[in-house]
Length: 303
Image 1 (cartoon, helix red, strand yellow):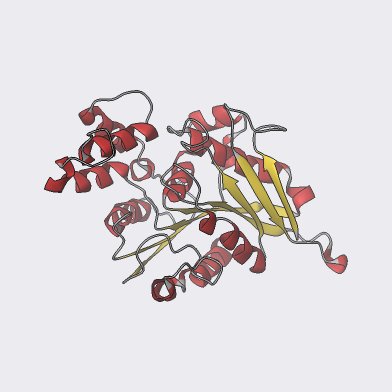
Image 2 (spheres, rainbow, N blue to C red):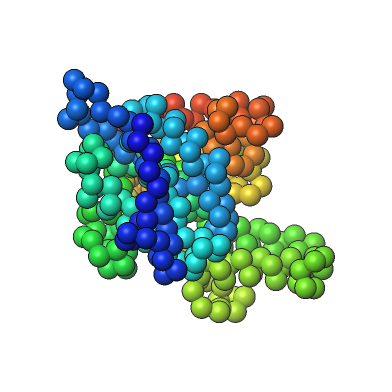
């Protein structure tokens, strides 16, 4: 196996472009040196403040074992740079184009490139899937739109609709209670601060919800979205499954091939639900463990 960490936008990561990626490439078999594998580009979650380690290497190793060349993307987060939309999405678009540009060296089939996103990383993947044909991302990446289009998308407990999440949390009357150790800010203040991290500028509270609505992937679904596999859990309080249904409905209305699984339990942030990602939550991991093989079967049918 060839594991290597590389800068995404040049020879070295910079303050303007801090994103990096790690390759997990299977060694070529002597008798099959020319065989090319599908590629999985993995975007872990982490609320756009970091990229969770349990949603990087464990996922890459699972896809590697399943016959993929795997890549984990450390897209820009608030700890490394400007996380406002569409900067993380531009990182992923650049990553897809990079994998295709290096397909021969990395023994990748350029027609079978899947993006895999969890939680906030799911938002990034869904955004690319619904926006690859627009002018913004190809211009930022400096590549034609066809080169940044994923061939399929896998979304695990994605945070698809931040405006929905804000509205749901703002219904809680406790949101306006003072929160200790935050400079006297209320829960509403903290929620709006987080939203402003994701969108550009300094919108008012009402403008913020409108801006979050405008970047929601559900609002941009059309018939050109690649096949989508997504899953969530009924007891996920962080990325409630209620936001997955409108996305699935839009996919259905546009005739996009898709598959949706909602497990009755499991909470949030379960990754590939194996021994490499488990952290004292074996029962919840077991409940969602089937998702990976279901996703592999889906990908085999659509790519």
